[in-house]
Length: 227
Image (tube, rainbow, N blue to C red):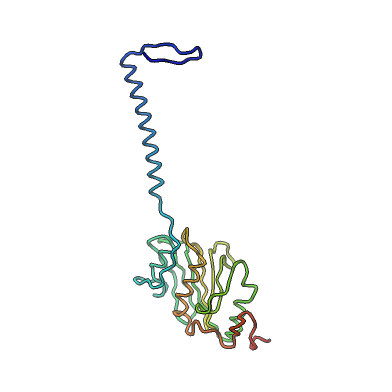
């Protein structure tokens, strides 16, 4: 005997054997369907791509390289969060250069490196690069062992930058722009690591400070800057 509840209270209704089996089967199918949906949602949540860790870049990485043989693809893959990266351009020590690295085979830039040699007055140019107006919005001077320059969040002329920085030994300015670091990474730390990697490869006298630079007070103008 099954009980059916209505507005008037419970009343006894006798169900035929076939009807009872039908209702039992319907309830089982509904329960199984709900459990299957929960299982699919759980599986979907567990199968997502893991967030890249913020481990430091391995500057000693070997293997294939980009940008004229200067940047290991292992480093670019870590920053991109993908197994595949490609480059456009090349970099040569002591010369004007430009190299962009892209995620996968697409057009989404992960980072970009530019080099500009100084023809004259290297100390004056260096002073201008790290003058107080540039050391704002979280930017800071690089450690002396990383060359003369700065690093910090954001970038000039584009809100899409995650971080940017530059260094110079007085003869070449190296600019690093991290535009789209992988989720979970520290773009400022990656920018500084790229500067550390590329400084000795691109600037002939790196990390030596420009001649005439006041090392004790790097933001003060040298005598040669007068005029």
